[in-house]
Length: 331
Image (cartoon, rainbow, N blue to C red; front, top):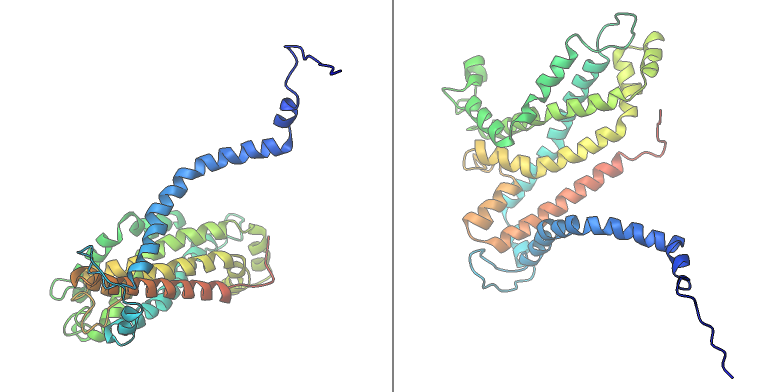
């Protein structure tokens, strides 16, 4: 004989309330909400960032012209041809020079100006740690180039370097001015590019390092200065170690800019050719553009893009590895 038990209409379904109040269900609801908001950003990132990277790697193994839908797989032929290309190696050399020299000069100037703005002034009003007079005005002045695009900055400096009408030639005596102009001489052209890139970015790092120095408790620097430490000793022994992570991040960021977009824009706008004279300012970004778009060799240009990507990753990893330290300083 089977006994049937009827449940009243008002009683809840068995286990429903318990499941909804369980930690597992709450975790599911929380992550469903988070993933729901991340689907669109990740989708856009995949379409506009990851997909071009994958396509570049794929086309680097083809002879695609960039103008036709027909192409053939050629294996590593594009990379083999690059190994025998003197212009390619000239571009790599110039990129490495920029990736080492530009961050070194830019970050050094940024650190110096930021230190002077925050700690470099004389003691006054009962404060041992003060910035130079007019520190806020200097900060705005240094940051001003960030309000301009790199294309505008390059165009302005192009006029400054132009022989005959350039401001630089009018200021310097004729004995210090190159005969064919700063951008017309092989030995000075790359140096002129460095000047433009450093001037364009130093203001950003002044503000960045000023913010990092401002986070250091004043008592630390005051104690050092009251104990007789000089400004230079305070900078190298206290300030620089405490903002080491910020400097390291700035080095990686500036190195990537020197290898990629910024060097491409400056060289493409102000140099002869661009990339001249005699490939003295040629960089991978410009050579990639000339090969892939001007000469309709998109497959070979994609191979250069892959080489540039690998070079950028190697320099970033090297900078992060060399700057890593086991003893982390906290305050």
